[in-house]
Image (cartoon, rainbow over all chains, first blue to last red; front, side, top):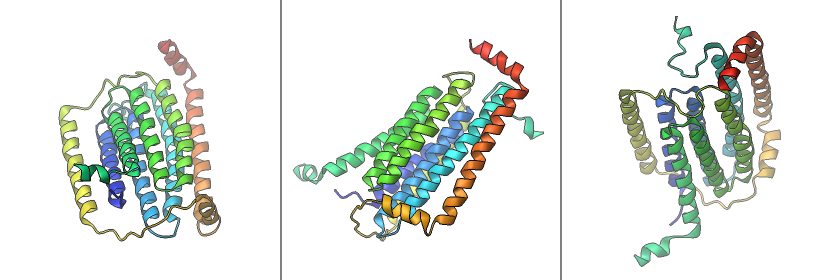
Length: 102
Length: 185
């Protein structure tokens, strides 16, 4: 059986949905961040797959590299915020952190 | 039956193995009650995704995925899990109604995605995998030079910002931090 582009797109669809479910149901801030990483990875699989199945061009590879860099930046800032939140409010439950709701 | 077996190729088996590793790891992240187990399942997923990249002939991106994601981001995530309270059990899971609505919404989205992916006709060209590292390096210094520099500045700013955020909190609440350390012990 030939592995075509649809197979990769289906795998990344499953990964995207799983990541969305993680973001929607988890209340631990770090777990939500893990869900975001799943979402970013599924998008990145799509970029690399399209880049592979279309002749020439490296745009998809470069975009997935940019996604990885942005994920690193996002993880650093988000985890700094989580640590700061934990030190100030002593919780990492996002439903308990309602100070900004006024 | 023989026909089916003769259709199975080594590369097909490898693809299905990598896809199964990726999706099972993702399910572990979503469903595990223990945050640490979620972190390790995330590692399995990231390794599977790196394998898929290599399978697609993207050698450089796969190596970067292994080094940056698993060596960097995942370690930082696991550290932050260990540095915060409630190590392990995520006691405060969402309500059943929240989860039911999420499952319905996610299944609807999955149906739409699968429908559009399988119905659409993709204009693909048969390609032979060639090493991509030299081409990526060339592209980063030519047509993608400005985005490359821009993203370097973004990464630098966010890392400095993260350091400032974490450090100031430690200085302002040194007493509180001492409390949490004592509570951990």
